[in-house]
Image (cartoon, rainbow, N blue to C red; front, side, top):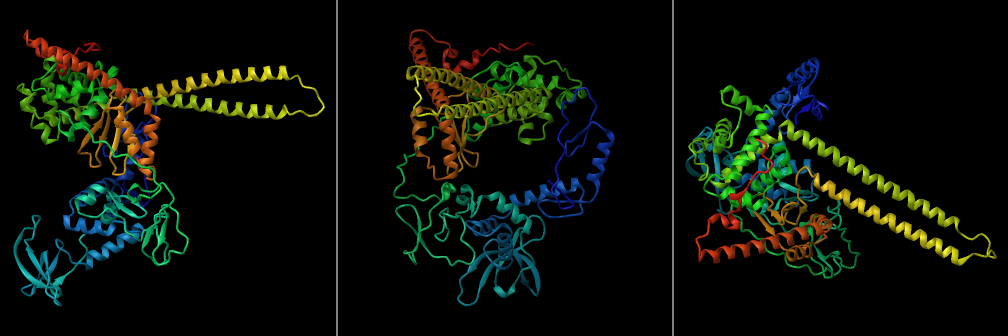
Length: 624
């Protein structure tokens, strides 16, 4: 977000209780909505003033929109940094204990002074200066020699020829990366800042070790300034001790710490080996996230879409099917109806092109083709002709899912979905408020009972007490208290169940040591695992695998401790879902075996197989 006079700036929240029929004014590049025209003009004039600063590059005297463009370009520069420079910066970052500004300055100076393979600079050539790239550092004794590739001027930066130059012939004009870009790169590439720790997938990509150096003090995260560092060893009780003076007191480790810094100790409980993931998807593994997103949306907003629920397996099989089928038709039709009824950009485009806005199941491909023509994503729009000619089925599975994902993104912006989201948020807030009120009353009752017990102290030691009457009163109190407690527990469980039903969208339960994310969907009996780079997926499908997974998590690490807490919290829900799905699969297998046995006597219809159940899908909620 651009800075206003070099200070943070926040966009306006959308107006509450906005009437769909009310005329509003919207700023194009911020999407802010105004009810008053004068306020709209006032804000627009502010954005046009040259008082804005790019939050990434530090460029100032910009308009708001120019600052946005500058930030976007700076992000692209980070993503397009040469591999050699990226590797050099990341190596200097890994396990550094410097503050961000100090680390940026250190790397910036190093990039000005260091010479490494891949860096681009200038060198003397024929009594002139020319741009070049270091191809190889030559070992030549006392004289430093470098093999350089001379670069043709222009965007392509093609190496036209090579030669060997001396170190004294190299000319450094400036660092190849600005300090602001370095700052952004460091923040984006690390998961921890005390010390700085790279994301593991980046460390692997650039061949950088994830093993922490010995001079990092695990108990406090940072070595105190001015203190001389010594090699440390881990004692049997998990403490760090200096090799130089083992007689001094050892420093206890304060757990939990970052998972990548956890070292095994002698008194650690034995952790089980993590079970292998099942990866028998019918679609490419990097498309599983899109599949889950589309399926979860369709089921979460089925009533709004007038789309009857279907299983994840049915959607996967329908997407992989080489012909269009009833489930695919109903999903696309439901999404298009929502967009048309919302008077969205898609509906406006239909009207402009004089196309009928009334959708029929027979014409769904025509509407999809038109949608693809209007999208700016080339890998999707190039399939418009195939869809129009009736060749949806043969399109690659990952493209089909990306098309559905785009449609879902459009649907999320409609008024109907937003209203449903707002309604669920309000209901969730009401349930949370009720739960808090129950907790408050429970605390008050405990305080009252505590005072009553103090008042029951016998004042006179000689006073006679009717033990039988007192015992009966205490028993009655316990019975009443137990009854109230049971009712409260039942009410709290009911509130938790209702809150779960109102879940707006799925979110991961947590992450493990290597930043893999764990997902559980209440309607699907599998625990999904997504890799840190979002490209690989797998799942666990049995209660036994869940138990072993939980026993493999090391609670000394921040991420795995939090993940285990969440798995314990939802253990019953997850294990019940896993066992239910397992029973359903067992039943399906028996049905398929029955179909196979029958097919040896009578030619069975292919749609009798449970794997083809999606062909029998009926949208019972379709009102059109």
